[in-house]
Amino acid sequence: MAVPIIRPCSISLSHRLFSQWPKKRNWVSCCAPSESTPARSEVQRSEVSFCIGTHLIPHPKKVDKGGEDAFFVSSYNGGVIAVADGVSGWAEQNVDPSLFSRELMAHASDFVGDEEVNYDPQILMRKAHAVTSSRGSATVIVAMLERNGTLKIANVGDCGLRVIRKGQIIFSTFPQEHYFDCPYQLSSEVVGQTYIDATMSSVQLTEGDIIVMGSDGLFDNIFNSEIISTVSKYSEVAEAAKALASLAHNHSTDSSFDSPYSLEARTRGYDVPWWKKIAGIKLTGGKLDDITVIVGQVVSG
Image (cartoon, rainbow, N blue to C red; front, side, top):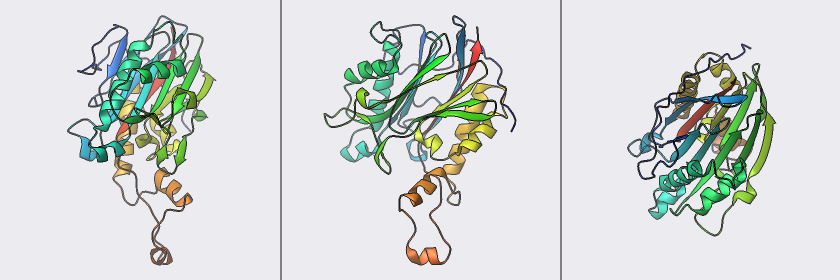
């Protein structure tokens, strides 16, 4: 397996902030869900930092509003990355699922350098959730890289993160769910999960490590082996993020692809009727969804 070698990128950012949320700090970059152009950032104030590339592809039926995922990238300290996936079920109550995820990420970006947060992703999640007023809910993952290379992760739901080192995945988050296709989520309602329910992880990173973060639209449609092989083909994190998002999107529209999502569904007892099974037919296909991808490389400086 080829080892991914990704060159450091420039400090330029092609993100844009949410139009409805003012930019409060010049070291925060917050991406609107409609942003699908790869963006890159790097910080050189620490022993190690992130070089970041991002890409978002909305659900085919949600292109006009840019989908319901939201994310942000901050150059604070070693770097902060986060993804929130708005829960689409709220649309049945005439609530735009994108509003909650967008507001949650905007507030999180504002609190990154807060003294009370003290570089704790769980506290960042708590503070952002507490001031989010939009109705809705979202799965959320936040990762904060310290200057010494320690990556701290807080995860609620089925967004995910992988760490690749020398062509192998050395760390993976695991989804939290009540039952199949019903993940844990931060919500505007009293009944729901909170920051206390987040799975907390910590992993020590070294220069050259690759981090892949995304919404479930990525991990439901791409296997870990495909993630490794895809990032190994690109020397730029922005291009790697775009390639992963494109591959996930292609799989999501392929009814014959035996995706991670369809495999999990069959494992949980969901399949075609018995008479189709007799004919050798099984449940296959990807999962149409918003697809958000953030690829980061750990660089020194």
